[in-house]
Image 1 (cartoon, rainbow, N blue to C red):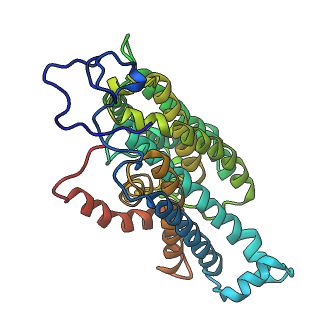
Image 2 (cartoon, helix red, strand yellow):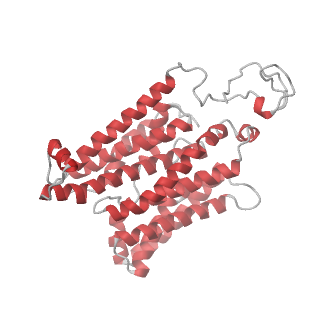
Length: 380
């Protein structure tokens, strides 16, 4: 369905049932009503080749992922030529370099791609759901919930393995998101974007206080937590990748399915409801997708800043506000940014490395400052 902007065609005092449709009739069904609002589909106004340009942009982003992935596999404490990397990827020979590539760098690179895509799409969903271009997955308390679960796992159960961190962190992220949704929908009111954001901030602050209390009283928990909380993909192998890929894949499917409904909701709640969108169901599905994506990514790599905040903003600047395009753009652009951050993390103090979460925050800080210093930040 194509929506057109009506500037002066609606008479003063006209109600929702008297808005003129295509034939000017005042007795039209909701499906035939022409509504005011932003053109999200790109079908009216842009040049006919706009979808082709958008598709070409996705192909370009995919090519950048391939290039960045090859560089990621080649760079490390033992740099390898790209020609050798390509040869060993196709024909492993059991050499030291081949073992490094296939057992360490390839799973790490694949995990960075998966985590980046998850964080990018989760951020795009949160910004569309809350209609706030500065929202990120942390609004749901996902990072705080995962942090508390990791701290309790170390302090109470003595967990000291990333494999066990993964399950505790994912469970904590999911429980925090559920608590935010229940608190945001407390009473007889349905959870609105504002209520969800306020509930997320309140729960995140409470959980952060609990985390501080535990790590200040338990040295072992503090030592383990400070490494995980910085955000790192070092030492993650195929088992971690296999576990999180299932959750992230499911989250991506749910996110893609909610795109058209989010477009209709961007026109306003009343308009979305008139167009047949089930608001509560759409919000619930979007929150499930964010929990799966951000929860699995945070469990695997720890809290990583900026990716879920800045990349969706840039994706909308390139592909437009249509969720059917902003979601895939975020899914392809975020891995590129995170791969670049991971490569920089290995080069800054080589042969040692710093956590990728630190580098992504440093790289993303100037971009975020540029965003907030704009004279006008458009609402979604």
